[in-house]
Image (cartoon, rainbow, N blue to C red):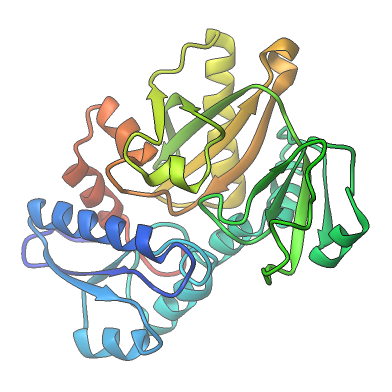
Length: 305
């Protein structure tokens, strides 16, 4: 994308997913960051008339600040492609692949020889029959983000209790990996650093976005060999999935098993950009200010991503 002087950017935020509130915060912060970087910015709360709004606005580029279904699963990216308006972050195929946890594992991680926890796919109805595998294990919708709908099921828990009123369709049952929570941001194919995440229970939606919900140690205090392995794995996941601009890959590490205890959980193509989010924090650690980060993402905007 050409120089920012006089360029008009539409920041698309909000939307209709379960992560709407987080997206509104991400969008507002990124809009301010882009203004500080010198762009003309219009904020759009995405609704069913999004295409018409964009046609009337005629922006030079779109900063995609949406989270969750319809915003980071290839759907809205398809609209941007149809309208031929350059947009930020990953394209249709990579977004759809990363949002589907089953495809991420079978079509990307396993093909790229990236380690994962053992898992299987079941329906919510199957939970009525009891535990699908011996506890503890993790239940997660295959196409939600920000830990929405994720439950850790332990001995004595009723697995159906978390899902009796939900309509997620298929669920992934994943073996619970004891140990430490790690994450790596990749910016323009370059891994930034490794952060270790500490939360009172586990890194759920509240821990991600509530002030004080979690504590981050950056860089993570882990063996250098494992640190570098996390960087390599995150870059390989980013590259193998066809991601653009920015992604964040989350890990679990059972230190009792050494290098063999490291597994990838998922890769996020639209990492949060809120005050408690990990990717802007890692960028700042590497000397990239928030306005610079927003500028870098929009300068990479294009179609056919």
